[in-house]
Image (cartoon, rainbow, N blue to C red):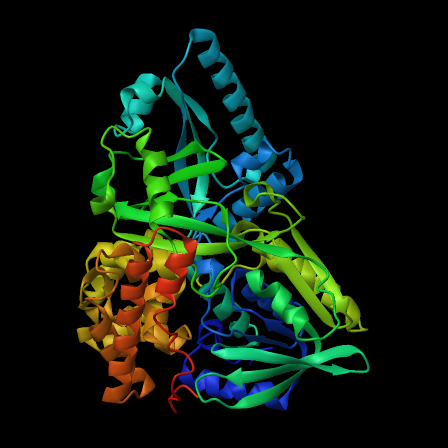
Length: 586
C-alpha cells in the first residue's frame, strides 16, 4: 500500500528512480502476487490485486502494451458479430464493461464512436428482411447493455440519411443503414494508465524485466527468476502466487516447468490494420462491413481512419508480427467494395499488426474461436489467464485474482475495481469543463489543452507543470505537430518509458499516425529522453539507429507476398532491449 502522505499521482509516477526502487523491492520483499505480463490483462490484474490490499509486483519483458494491447482496433465494444454466434453472455459482459469504462472508470480515455451498418442493395423483400434482421441484432445489442451502457441507442437511417452521415459510400452499395454507438480508446494509453494506477496502490512495476524461469518449492510455484534487460543482472523474486497474463506467450510459461501441461491452449490470430488520412474517406461515423470470414471496421481516429482487421492463424515470430502485401491487398479490396473513391497503396500512412490470444480447440479457424477467457492452475501457485478481449480486461483480472487469493490461505476482500476510477479519471470532468480557463492560465491554445485532457485526464496537470517549469517543452515534437515535447519528457518521468520505441510507438502514437512513422521525430525525441535518462551521445545514436532500422524492416515486410517472407524481413531489425546497459535505467 502507498504512503498516505503521498498523493495518488505522485505514488503512480513510474520514472527511473521509481524503477530502481522497485527493482530493489523485487529482491527484498515476498509478494502476495507476482504478475508476469504488462499488457492490459496483466496491468489490470495488478490493479485488482493491489486494490484488495495485497502486495503486488508486475514484471514485463519489454514495454507496457508492447504486444497485443497496443495493436488492437482501439474499440471498447461488446462485439456485434458475436451475437450471430449466440455468445449472448459474452456480449452482455462486454457491453456492461464498456459502460463502466465510459461512465466511471476511465471517462477521460473512453469515448463514444458512432458506427454505420450499411444495408446492401437488393429486391424490396430482401432489403426489408435484411433491415429487420440487422435491426433486431442491433436492438438486442442495445438491450444487453441495459440502461447503463454508456452510449446512445441505435437508430435506423434511410438512404439519404446514411449518405449524409457517410458521403464516401458508393451510392449503389447500400439502400440505408443502421447507426449504433460503441466506444473507442487509445489501447496503449489505457494500459499505461492501469500500470500507473497499480503503482499508485503500492504495486512494484518493472518493465524490461524478462522472466527466464519459475521457482518451485515442494511442488508449488514460489516466484520467478527475472533478468533485468537494462543491466543484464538476474534476480530471484519470491511470491506466494504467480499470475501469468502473457497472451500468446501463455504456453511458454508452463514450458518453464518440465513435464507440466499448460492447462489451456492458446492460438495466435493475426490482425492487420491500415491507417489512412481522414481526408481519404468522406464520412463522420465509422463503418462495420461483412468481410468473410469475419467483419471489417472503418473507424475514425483523430485525423485518420483505422481500417481492419484480418483474422488469420500466425505461427511465426510473436514479438513482431508482420503484415504482408497480401494482408494489405485484402483490406483494400474489402473496403473498396463500398467506397465511392477507392483507396490505393499511396493512401496508406501506416500499417500495424497484432496477435489475438484465442482459446483454441483442435481444428477451428481462428475467426470461429471464442473470445471468452479462461483461468488455469497447471501447478499449485501458478495461474494462467488467457483469451478474452481488451474490453473485458477487468473481468479477466478479477477472475484470476479470485483464484490466486484462494491460495493465500487468508481472507481477501472481493474485487473493488468496478467502483475504482483509474488514475486521471478523478477530477477530469471539472478540468474539461474549465479547459478554456486552464488554457489561458498556461498560455496554450485550447486545442492543446483538450488534447492533453483526452490523453491524460487529470494527470494532464503533470504535463502542464513540466511546460510551466520549462516553456520550451510547449514546442511540438519534430514531425508530429499534435504532440508536445513535454509529453516525451513526461513519458520518461512518469510512464516507465525506457527506449525511443516506447515513446514513439506507445506513449504517443506517432509511429502509426505519421506517414514517416516516426523517422522525422526520432532524433528530437531521443534527445529529449537523453536529458531524463542520462544517455550518452552514443546511446542516443544507438536508440535512433535501432528505431530507424525497425521502421525500415517493417516497411520491407509489408512489400513481401506472404507471412513467411514478411516475417523474415521484419526480423532483420533486432530489438533494442538487452543490447547494452544504461546505468540511468538500471
